[in-house]
Length: 621
Image (cartoon, rainbow, N blue to C red; front, side, top):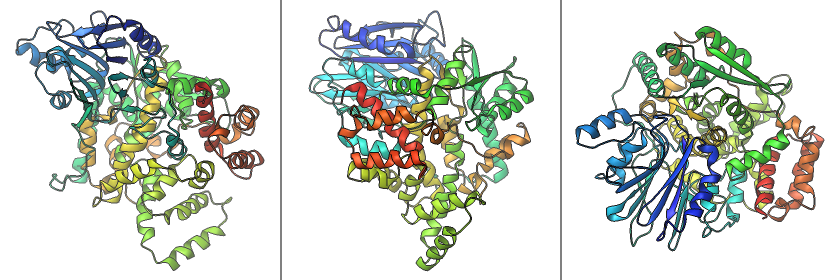
């Protein structure tokens, strides 16, 4: 795992101070080494976190004659077979690292074919001297970030926005239109960013820049859809195939020349990963769990301990009392944009603790996305049926729920929320269920509802028209929430501490296989992740399979009424507040007041606004 950066330049040697600034800003992503390579019209730079070929893989990396330069962030899992193929073809490789295979492949392959040969999580940049061609590539699911700015003769790229902004010709301009989508989703939907003019390379795409032309983006991989002609597996066959494919995905992610371990929450996904690791390693797996010293916070230690004992892992538990005031400032710096997902807090702290013991950690991210692990997927399918009910029937349901004893029956509030949103239709209802800021508050704060982000969201939904509802929801989730929330959170929070996180569930071949399974194999009735649970049932403790889903969260509602109250009110409502210049002040006062008096739980809304405020202050906007 590393950080990459660079830019076009007619005088590369003169512009070395710029690349040095980029390298300095990305040091956390690659603290072990750094270097740059200058072509006839560009500079490529890399901060290195040494994982493979620790001694011999430092940047810069080129092909045999130095006519192709390359920088890489991430891991290419099939690099050993590619090395064998290249050597058989007469190539002379100078290192054992995965980065070098890209330089040799780029000698003859076009950008799309090059990216298609790579199996891994990656963002790369390649310069080929003979045709002065720059190619940027990003992995299929977007696990590794890659941003760029292009205007006139200026082209700059980097793993993080701060590296792009380090170039003197890149303006720091706020995209005002991004604020409403940010409030709705808790992130600025890609490929746009909070900065006007800076974009991200879409996942599964390559960007090519050649003399005399602008950036050309080509797609080499599509979000998979269930193929009508795919061979229909029986349920029992699917169970066996899921277990085998997950085991293979785990095994390929164990290649490392440095200490390696696993995040362990005691949930189904991380437990499955640890179980698979234990089957193929000859020493105890290093596992890591975090808990809060807080009675109503999140504490996953008891379940994680159960799994650790079952597999004899060398288990590490960390108990923390997070200083949220200090953390919000740090998290915004690492994200480079406002970010509304408060689970970044425990992810940051877990990564910090884990990095003291290992350099690589496997995680269970992606299991919910592949095999329908969120309750909202059931809600989305139910909403489609609910829409088809006669209006009189819907009113009867809503009337009954309105008088139901919500305090005595825990499921009633969820049903009330479902009924209130389901009538909006899909995908609006689904988006509203997962939104950090309710639509009515976004509208009150900004004067309009959600902006271009909602149009893009609906377009992603429309692309799967004709598919089963659950399949459509899973594809939508992959292209939005997974891409711009979960993957961003894990990348930024782990790389803040120089920790590489690998996600076996997001192996692209496993993703393609799961997409072709029947929807009923994943969710049936109220049963979620059905085929995955049965696949790992023989190896994972029974109590893990039967436990309820629990998010990786923090007690925001209570924090904003206690520890964070004075801080939040001062940041959002004082004369120094920046959000007051971009949002409606009356709506802002109402939302804060409702929460502090207990009239509504607006904790997630306040966190979303608070990170926006911290960001705006940092930029002076």
